[in-house]
Length: 220
Length: 220
Image 1 (cartoon, rainbow over the protein chains, first blue to last red):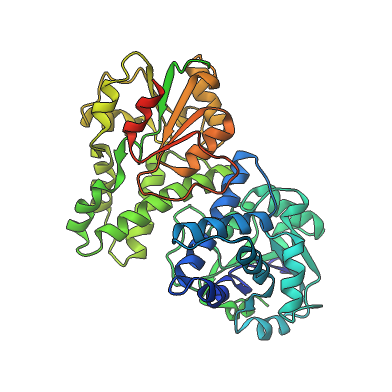
Image 2 (cartoon, rainbow over the protein chains, first blue to last red):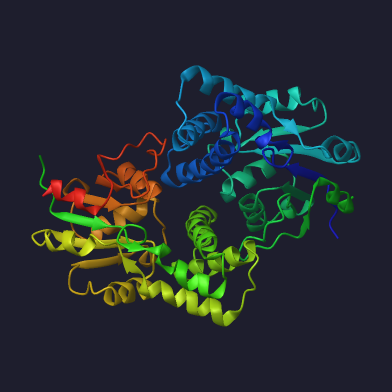
C-alpha cells in the first residue's frame, strides 16, 4: 500500500466545535442559543455552496457573518451590529474537541495540515487561541483560489501546495459533504461521524468512519 | 418599463407541495412522517448542490430517491426497496398549493413556463396528475444540460429555449436559493415566502416577496 505521508484535517466541526458558541448566543438571545447555533452553521455551509455555484465568491468570514444575521432573524432575535461583531469574533475562539490534542501528539512523523473553507484571518487565530500553534506544517485556505470545498479544484489546490499526491493523503473531516468531495477527488478518507449520522447517499463512501478523531490512529 | 412577457415558475415548493407526502410517509413510518419529509427535502436540495459543485451530475429522480433513503435511515426507519419505490413515485402525485390554479387562470396572456431541477420524467406526470395539463407553454428541465439551479448556465439555458431576454422574464420561486440564483442571473424575481422566512443574506434581494402566489398578479 502507498504510504500515507500527509494528514489533512478539515477545521470546523472536525477539530473545532462550532457549537461551543451556544453559550455566547444564549447570553444575547436567552432560550434560543442552540437553535440559532444550528441555523448559523447550516446557513454558513449553504451560503458557501450557493456562492460557489453562482460564481459569487466572498470570504468565509463574510459568509459566517451573513449566516449569523440570517439565523438571528429566523429565530426572532434583534440584530445589532455590536452583537454580531462580537459573535463572529468569538469564531476565533472556538473550543477544540476533547480528544484532538492527544491524537495530534501521536501523529508527529506525518505532515499535518489544516485545509479549510475558512479564510486565514479566521484559521490562524483559532489555531493559536486553541493552543495548537506549531503543530501543523501547513494551514491552507480555499481563499487563495476562491473555490470552496467540495469543488475538485479546491482539493487539487491543497495537493499542489503540499507538493504531494492524492494517494499519499489521508483527509479527515466530520462533514459528510466534505468527505464526499475528498473521496470524489481521490484522497483516502476518514469520516469523523460525531453525530452518528447515516453515510451520505452520493455514491462516494468514505474509506473509514470513526465516532471521533482517535480512530485515525489506525492509519499510522 | 420593459414588459414582462414570460412568467417562469419553479416547481417543487412553489407550485407543488412536497410535504403533501407526509401522510404517505406516516403510513410507512408512524410518528416520523413529518421529520422524514423535512430531511428528505433538505437532502434533495443539498445533494443537487453538491453534485453540481463536484461535477457528478445525476437526474433529480435519482437524487430524490437517494435523499429519501438518507432521510429514512436518519430517522431510524427500515429502508425497503418496495417502500422507497412507492414513495418516490408518489412524487409524481404531489398536491398543488391551494391558490395555484386560480392564479394561473388569470395569467393567460403571458407565456407560462415551468423551469425545474426536476427531470421531465418527474415534471410531466406531476403536472398532468395535478390537472395542470395545457396551462404551460413550456416545461423545461435542467436535465437537458445537466446544470442544476442556481448555476447561471441553467437560467441561461431556460432563457435560450424560450427565445427571450432575462429582462422580459418574471421568475417565481418559493426557494430562497433559487430566487438568489435567478436574481444573480438577471431575471425579475418574485419570492413566494410561504414559511415567513428571512431574506437570504446573499447580497441578492428579490424584487418582490409575497406570502403566496396571488401576489404575482401585481406584475400583470
